[in-house]
Image (cartoon, rainbow, N blue to C red; front, side, top):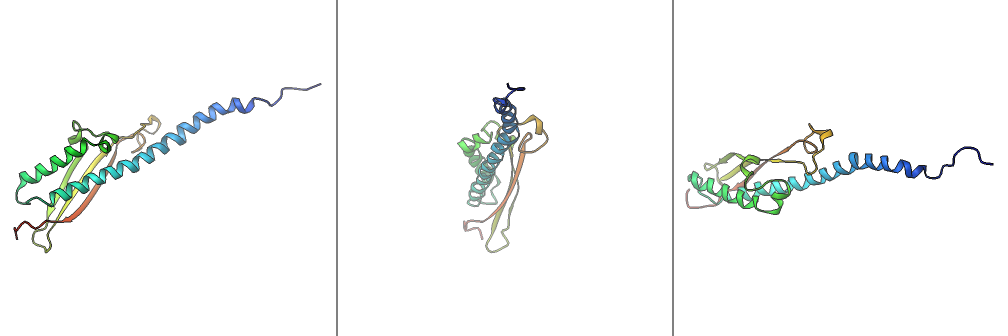
Length: 155
């Protein structure tokens, strides 16, 4: 005669809650961390192509510099990389800030330096981590790059 219940099926009953905890605490944050790496690369690429384009313009012509920044930024906002990190041509100006554009014409060779800040939203926002950048809140990347100014016969 058997006494009490058997242990068959207990593993199946514990599997559901354990899988739920695993998905919420391991899988979603892991997806977000992989996404942050992709977002970092896409944001760096934006700053890189923008400083390359600005190095080709005349630093004394502010309209040409602004036009180059806008053209490159809007073209980049139409790419799949930008849409992956939640940036579209409509919200580009609120997500990307170009600042500290400096030229060093007195040095030889002359350089152009550009600092850009890009706000990235998390791929899977988690309300449990609402204050953590990259998991529940927007994450801001800041890039500074320097490139030689192309010779245009200005010196």
